[in-house]
Length: 257
Ligand code: PEP
Image 1 (tube, rainbow, N blue to C red):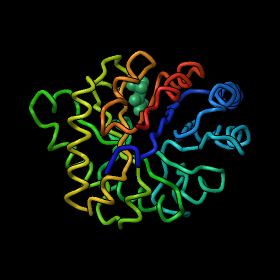
Image 2: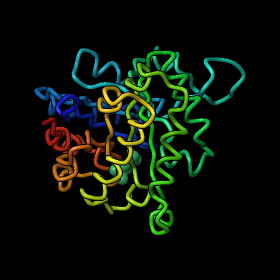
Image 3: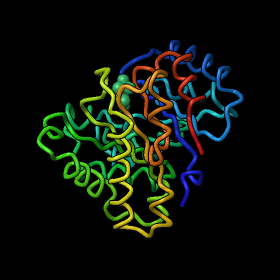
């Protein structure tokens, strides 16, 4: 199946940045800059506190809302957590799950990623499941083993329909926030490997429709080259999503054919 079957997705992960007023200003500027963009799914992931205000700005626009995490239970005595029904209620269509910073600093595991993905899917939220190797793992020749572990562990037990609602984000940890980017060939190699893993577990018609984003120091200077690779279906953008102009430029570079 051709890549043209997959609409590229450009998502901005704002991490622990932006107050409510800053979030509204950024989103308002972005909305104007990308108003004419079609054939690309545009997503912003502000901090929890700004989700409602950003949703008010993007309502009836071509920008979609994501949260940066979700808890696996719907409600109960889980102080500090936010559930899938709550995210749906505030206007989210997507949720980032298993970002390397959550794996590294907050004890996220493949098992919790899988539970969170299932909770999100049960409430009609699309999970953006992040996978990626650390520098030592790449240098030790373990990239494929780590990616296989993250991908298969994250999607275990998902039906065809559920997998089709998921996005996989390949984010080599050594490229996140470091200014080092995987080369287009390195990205394509891992994306192709991920596509192969999906094809082993699901019918080719299903596996070939799953969007696989690249993330790791994507900026206007390198986005076109990365996204021109056949299995790179868009980008998960950190730093460059904090400015409307640079994020909008990356959106305009999204390649769908
Ligand atoms: C990210 O946070 O997912 C990310 C890719 O960050 P950056 O673009 O800043 O490397």
